[in-house]
Each structure stands twice: as C-alpha cells, then as structure tokens.
Length: 540
Ligand code: FAD
Ligand code: DLZ
Ligand code: SF4
Image 1 (tube, rainbow, N blue to C red):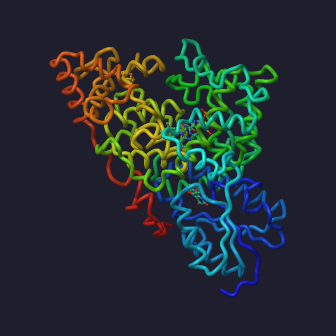
Image 2: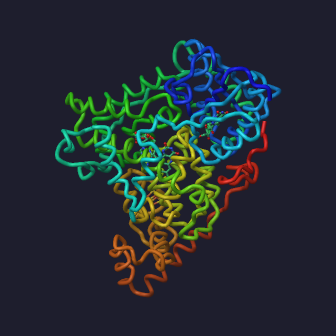
C-alpha cells in the first residue's frame, strides 16, 4: 500500500472517551478517526436488542462530538452496502481510502479483538501502534507484577493497593474510618415499605427526543428484532451529558443507601439503590476514577455514610480493576475453564423466563425488559442456580455476554467463570458462592409468592435450591470438601442420615430431569469459539 496520508485511529464501540489514549498525541489535521458498525460485533453473540441500540447510539453521538471538536471522523454505518462487517475488513478499507501511513489504536477489551489487531501490521503492511487503555486505574503490567509470585490473588489485597495508589478514602497512609472494608454494616434484606427511587430515563423518552437514538432503535428492531430482549423500556444514557445526569441522580438519591441495600432484591424494583453506571463506564462515557471522586466528595461533605461510599468505591477500584487484570492474566484459558466439570445445557427458561421459580423468573424479566439485573440477582440467583445445577460455563458465559447492557468479555467472563461458577478452580473466589433457598428468602421478597416452599427441603413442592445445594456439594466432594471454608456444610451433610441424604439427592435429580435445554441459536448463530477468531465471518 502506497502510504502518504494521515494516521488512522480506529475507535471501538467501548472506547468512547475523548481522553482515549489513541488520540492523546494526535493532531486533528494529521488523523482520521475510524468508527465502524460491523456485523461481526453485533453478531458474535446475539446481544440483547437494547445493548446493540445503546452501543450504536452512543457511537453515533460520540462521532458527532468528535466532529464538533474538529476531528475528521470516517464513520461506517451498519447499512453501508460496502461494509465488510469486520473490524479488520473495515480497517483495511479505510487504510486504502485514506492512504494511511500508519494505524494507532487503544488496546481492546477482548482477547478476541486483540488477536485481530496483532494481525493488522502483517496484513496491511503498515506500522500498527497498540497503546495501553489508560482509562483503567491499574495498568496491566502493574497487575501482572502484583500477581506474580502470589499463591492467592485475593481482591481485598489488590483493593488496598488501589486505595493507596488513588488516595481515595485515605487519611495519609491510613484508611478513612480506621478500616479498609465496611461490609459488616452493609447488606441488609428488604424491609416492608422500602421504596427505592424511580430512575431517570433518557432518550428517546425526553421531551425533545433524540433523532439519533430513534434511528438506531428503528435499525435495531428491523435487523435484530429476533434477538432476546425488548426495546420498549429503552432509557440508557447514550451521551456523556446524560451519563453525568445519571451519576448526579445516583450520588444524591441512591448512594446514601447503596451499601445497606446492596444485596437486597424486591420484586418489581429492578434497580434498587444501584447506580446503573456500568454501561456508561464500560463504554467510556464516564471516567471510573472521576465517579469514585464524586462518591468520596459525598462522604466528605456528609451527604453519604462511609459504609455506603467505601462499598461503592470498592466495586470500582477493587472489583472492576481486579477482574480486568484477572481476565488478561488468565486468557485464553479462562474461556474454556470448567474446573467443576459442569456439563448440563443451559435451560430454555433462561431465555423465556418461563419458570415457576419466582426469583429466576423475576431476574429474567428484568433482564429482558432492561438489559439489566443487579449484582446479587446475577450472582446469587442466576449464577447460584447455574453453579448448583452444573450448567456448562461456556453456555452460561454466552448468556451473560449477550443479555446485559454492560457486558464485555473482560468483565463478564471473570465474573461468570470465576466468581459465579468457580470454573477457574478458585483463582478468583476462595469458595463457591453456593447458597440454598434460605439465602434468597433472607435477601428478597420473592419467596412468599413463589409456587415453591422455601422452607421445605425435599419433594415436588420444595424450593429447588435446597436439594440442589446438597447435590452440588455431594457431587463435588472430591474437589471441594478439603476447602476449609466449606468444612461446616460438609460436616452437616455428613451428619445427615443416609436416608435423608438419598431423599435429598433424589429430589434434586427429579428437579434436574425437568429442565428443558434451550433451543440452539438463542446466544450464537454460528460456531464461534471465544478464544479463536472463528467468528470473523461477516454477518450483515
Ligand atoms: P452498582 O451495583 O451500582 O456498582 C457500581 C459499579 O461497580 C458498577 O457500575 C461496576 O462498574 C462496578 N462493579 C460492581 N461489581 C463489579 C464486579 N463484580 N466486576 C466488575 N465491576 C463491578 N459487570 C459489568 O460491568 N459487566 C458484566 O458483563 C458483568 N457481568 C457479571 C456477571 C456476573 C455473573 C456477576 C456476578 C457480576 C457481573 N458484573 C458485570 C458485575 C456487576 O454485577 C455489575 O457491574 C453491576 O451489576 C452493574 O450494575 P450497576 O452499574 O448498577 O452496579
Ligand atoms: C458490543 C458491540 C456491538 C454490539 N457493536 C459494535 C459495533 O458495531 N462496532 C464497534 O466498534 N463495537 C461494537 N461493540 C463493542 C465491541 O464488541 C468491543 O469494542 C470489543 O469487543 C472490544 O471490547
Ligand atoms: Fe426462588 Fe426458592 Fe424462593 Fe421460589 S422459594 S423464589 S425458587 S428461592
């Protein structure tokens, strides 16, 4: 390629930050920004309709902002007849179009995409500079150094290094309030009369409407109307300004109660006191450190208690940064991990929501309507069920990647394979998050109106989580009974009479036999392994 033109800067759909590293040292006159709507990304899993709409609308708004700021933006739309529908195909076409002399790009959030980028230099014959994603607080080399030589990679220790590094909630070198972690004061179950605030909704429901979002919603319902989920309640922030408004709402109305009700679940209250900021942060509309500084300011001005603010900041500079490090440390193996040899197919009701188990039905409903469920619904309802029922990790991970607006593999996979399913053999969590119905009953108001009885242990009317819990421990005894954190439940299981144990296992087996496997094609329309580039086939 005869290259005399500008430097081409591809900006991916989750790199929508004006401070993105790939633009940091570029001049406007010598740069073409390339943004690409491609079938490969809309189709490598069959994303929730609202997730596609959110990303495409946010991309189009970001391109508009960049142009207004003087950048030349080459924007390839999904309906462009010449669209090759892959990042690599579009980068190649644009490099020719602009006779680019080189490519500069911020590292992507997915292993699959990084593998593509590594091929560009050879296939295009151009210099390709891949730059670190500086929106994360912990650079990957620092994370790898932190992990090197440690036998246990626990989030809590990593989190303390992040507190020291950022100075968040620190008094000199001491944590504010004398403790690093205030979880003991958090995590209450729901109380009668508790009324979480209504959420602000954004375009196109605002009075002025938003032509970009309306166009995108039409495009998505035309092209992806057969994907899981609904667009009816679409209200995600698609611009920086709207994301800031959501942040204001969270800081004022929700943060003061965030910790206390962090794990509580109430039917019909899909968002409780959660922030809903993950999509905006993951797309780049909000800076995670700035979000944490706003939360800290709320504590320092007396607007929110330390337990709430510490709990919230831990999720972002602790968990979020930690899972990102673990993803890059453990890929590509993490995508195929299955330490508990779980082989059951994903049940159909994960897509349809048609199950008499009210906790699961409520969570799938919220997921379908909003592309959202909060953390404890993801972990202790969907994840716990998948763990106890022994669902195949790769099918569970595909589901999570497809259905949530905030799902990108770097954050979704460690949470699913590591935190929820223990498929990584305990690298991320020191014990599986396994729980019987009693936990869900304590933390939610679901059980009262459920067709199952949470107090019954066995039989067709018993809450299925109860027998499944023991079935899980029993079938994994070789792998898990040596874990000191599971000594108590294993001792309890051992104390049960052989008859009671047999009845419990039979009850679990009877329930498992009723699960209908999902029809093929809900999550993926082609054979596409996460750790390969097999899904490069264009899917317009
Ligand atoms: P809040 O409850 O308000 O929390 C504040 C912020 O903390 C979030 O916005 C997020 O940025 C961060 N955060 C909290 N917990 C985690 C965590 N475990 N890992 C990383 N960041 C965290 N989060 C995603 O962003 N994308 C995913 O695909 C995703 N998949 C998940 C799958 C499973 C099985 C589990 C258990 C968790 C998953 N999470 C994921 C983490 C968490 O559930 C979501 O970040 C959170 O529910 C998003 O809603 P929120 O913005 O209202 O969060
Ligand atoms: C998730 C997604 C979707 C649905 N569509 C696009 C798209 O058309 N163009 C784009 O640049 N990015 C999209 N994305 C986000 C990418 O999948 C994401 O940037 C990579 O997976 C790297 O994290
Ligand atoms: Fe879920 Fe069991 Fe409670 Fe029903 S009884 S809502 S299945 S925990």
